[in-house]
Amino acid sequence: MKLITQILTNRRRILSLIQRVFRLFMKPTERQKKIYKKIAPIIGINPKVIRYGDDTSEKSIFIMECPDPIDSNINFYSTIGLSDIEVNDKRYEILFTGYASETEIGNILSSCAFFIMKDGWGIKPGAVFETLVEMYKENLDMKHVLFTSPYLWEDKLEDFEVENDKINFLLGIPISDAELKFKAKEGLEALENLFEEEEINIFDINRKSVL
Image 1 (tube, rainbow, N blue to C red):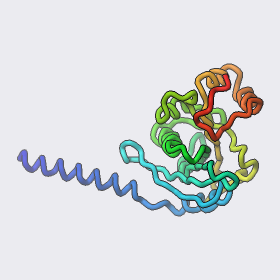
Image 2 (image 1 turned 60 degrees about the horizontal axis):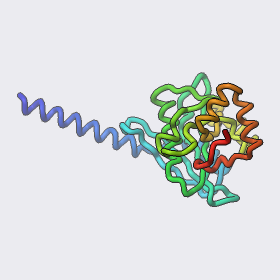
Image 3 (image 1 turned 30 degrees about the horizontal axis):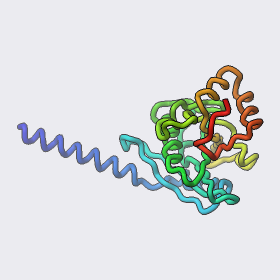
């Protein structure tokens, strides 16, 4: 009896492992392909898409990465498929930027997506996901991710629809503890004005805090 139980347990474990591997290598849906084909020419050039899995391999998200058409030292990133789920009756994809030499941006962006997909974290302009940068990049001034309008692309992402669903885009920007406190006290607009006055380099995750 013990042998049968052990065999069944092992079979369940193997089946679970196969299912996890299968999920990780699933192909994108037709909807996700449509998002990719529409967003890629807007964001950059020579795009590539990588599937990121969470720490349990239960969830995965596609991340598109492409060089800036003007400066090949800078990469642009976008989730592909986060908008499959609704967040407060809206659908979102998240954008991120950074120097091409940085290797953790895809992980930071995918973790943002997983906290939304798995844990129900809310996202909207002005939302902050705390410690998301610090999870992957320790000992930096930058600790958190602030979500703001994707101003780098001006109005090119307005009225973005796929299969009759309006998709909203937000740009993730790393911020420091002091900048987070300033936002909590003075508001999002005041922080964005401060960033504009200080001409922060949003591509540099290693930048120093302006406060």
